[in-house]
Structures are given as structure tokens and as C-alpha cells.
Amino acid sequence: MMLEQKKKYNSVQIKNISKKYAVYRDAIHALLYEHPKGVSEAEIVSQLEISQSDCQELLYFGEFHRQEIHGNVDERGILYNTRKTDPPAHSLEYELQILKQNRHPLLKFVIRFALVLLLLLVIVFFVYPYLNSSHNSAIASLNHRIEQIKLTATKFKCEWYWRSGDSCYVNGRLLTKTQFQQEFKNFLQ
Image (tube, rainbow, N blue to C red; front, side, top):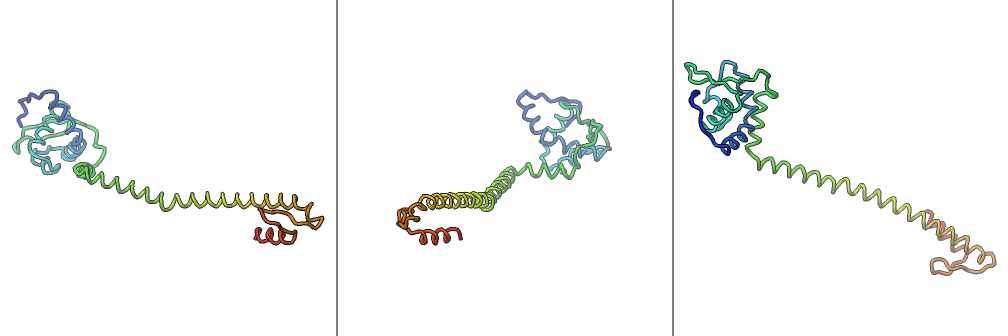
């Protein structure tokens, strides 16, 4: 790529290169920042693991459109430096790791799917039964209390019959006072 000649790109091509450059921007900055004497195009290609033509496009875009990269002619060829003075946010190793992860979008999808599935399994097998059991025990406790109140009310209602020595209907059965007290005692246990 020649420094002097400026390629003509239409707006769609510039937009596509801009999207591609956005992915590699931090990695290129970290790479150029770590090598203040400059980096050749071949070194950038080997470090970022991209094609020669992609590297040329990215360097061109960074140099002429973003003005973040500066190319100097040297005896080794063209060496590229960063024009940014601030250090990169992350190390070069971290940026290269991020690039490798971004190259495999299916892997990211599988990992996200597995994490969501794992979360759902934890909810279904651990959280839901706990909530359901506590809900069921609360309902069972409430039902037991309601039955106690009903039996106590029935006892007061039937007291009048039992004083006279008669039997009383409890839940559709005719019971004497001793039979009722036996059932009430069994219910409380």
C-alpha cells in the first residue's frame, strides 16, 4: 500500500470497512502502541491473523479516514505507528483473545444457550420445588387450621345435643361426644 495515493471508495465501501475496522480498532491500537518504533504490514497480518488485503484496507482506513495510524517509510518498508497518545484500554493479549472469540459467533451462541439452559435447569430442579413445597406446606397448614376451626365450631354446635345425651351429625356421620372427642384427638396429632 502506498502512502501517497489515496484510494477512492464509495460510501457503501467506506461503511463496510468502517464496521470491519471497528472490530479490529482496539487490537490495532494495542499492537501499534506496544511497538513504538513501528510495525510492518506483515507483522500486523501475522498478529491479527487476517488476510493481506483486509490488513491493507484496515490500515488505509485507519490512516486516511480515522487519522489514527501513521505510516513511515523505512529500510524495512512501511512501518505503521499509532497517532494516539493515550495507552490502550486493554493489553494486546486480551484484545487478540477477544478477536478470537468474535471470529466464532456460533461458539458464543452455544455458550450463551448452554448458560441459559443451565439457569433454567437450576430454576426448574431447585428453585421451583422449593417455592412449590413452601407454598404447599403453607396451604396444608392453612387447611389444617381451617379443619380445626370447623371441628371446634361443630363441637360447640353439638354440645347442646350431647348434654341431653343425644348424638350429633359431624361431617355426615352421627357421633356421640366420646366418638367425636376421639376423632378430634386423632386429628390434633
